[in-house]
Image 1 (tube, rainbow, N blue to C red):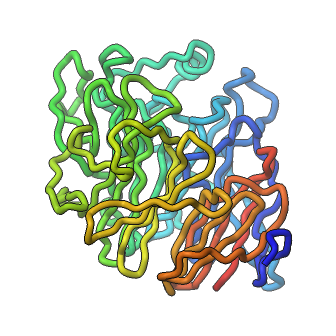
Image 2: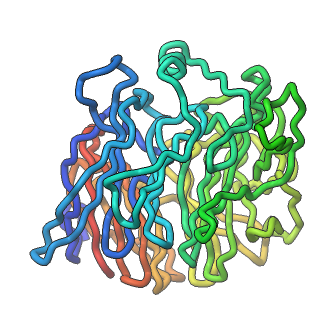
Length: 435
């Protein structure tokens, strides 16, 4: 099918042309939507009301969409933050709904304490309770206008850690909630010595508490100001002094085993990362690489298994996607600094990943319950291939001028939900279809 033709199946608009802030909502890491109980929840950084100090007055807004009988959607909204910092790549928000229907939102962070809130009632966005660590207007201004933060303690929020960036939610096959993020393992040190590690935390729905998945790193006074409870350890999943870990991305196979992919960077923060790394395991902290070798947590650079088979001679942007075949084989989509994107599929018998090019540089990838792989590229163009087939079929496009797709598949309904933005970055769209 020619890519200019419409997709040969019904695609339903859920939300179209929502005005968002073109510079403040360049979302490359966050989870900007969730779907549960027939309801769509989404969060964006939008222009504020014109009050407050320019540059620190954008609004982070949660929206809830419910489908009516006539196939139109009704929407309500709630502002969770009026002091969102204009930061193109860091202060975007993530949203998720837990098993009981409570809405979780993490927002407005670039090396900040947790800014995190949970709805007071299931499936209801009219009110939220803040469960983060407060920051003052002075601290917000200092971050924006001086590019400095100073939060030396290990954190007092409901989610472990401090100096948080890149929060992203995920769920396992049982609907249990997780969050991944970057945080300062030694937050009281000079910036170049803070060792920004990978954080993974699991939510206990019954206790409504978060718990880290990682290995203990003992803190001394020079490393962190300890909390009132006398906690003396941090628990990063991956960490090494004088390195920065980028975007731990997790997925769960049919046996509910966790698979993680993350990137490294020497020294301080920056766009270029290397050694995308892979591990598989469970929440009891028993993790292995594809050879079966056990991995002690936290995982350091030398013990991380490189997806590309190369240690440091190829650089990548940090965003990536992980999906699974019906045989529980992990498939990882990544973007090198060179043009195009790559799909790396684990060859289990050889204990290595094998590379192919992503169709039309597609940036989103999901696998449905029939094992068909679906790739989504700017356009918004859709590609599909049945399980075991190497050639991609062009399934057409949803519409022109639609970029940066993020896609989730809900097997119980055979439903795809797609979030995308206009290629100018100032409009958000959500679509759904079933196959």
